[in-house]
Length: 179
Image 1: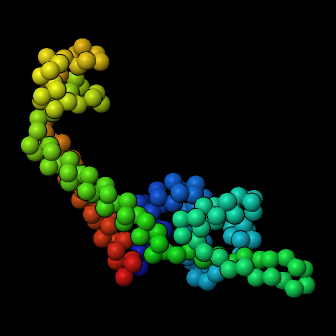
Image 2: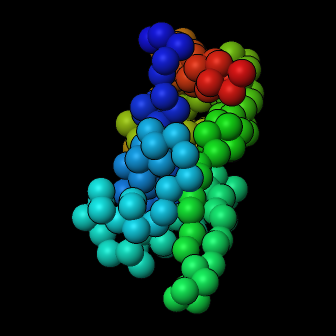
């Protein structure tokens, strides 16, 4: 991955934009960033299969998070206003970095816990209990009555470690984009 990576090409960013402003947000951000100048909402409209009102909804959602900003100009002949929009890539990176650092913190805490505690569960996807609680339930799952079995914490720590590695790598890419 060279330095030429555009922010909207990162999976992490695409997922984030979809959550913030819906399915077409990624494409809209791409259009604005590639234009490299303020873009009128009508111009964006020509490139997306959406009504202008839907495009404005996406822009307003991005604006609410500080990702999109606009300038308003009045056409003196018609008295109408037109809006030109810009996307602030650093703001996207900032918001995601905040989110990621929370996730990283949680994972690191979780890995610390995993290392010191034994966890018991009645099977895949079932509720997990630390030793003390499992013992109180006589090592039977209070929901299903199935036996509670000691989980392989090494495997879990490895999985968490992998996830952590991915998160940290993505954060580094974002920080490069910011600088």
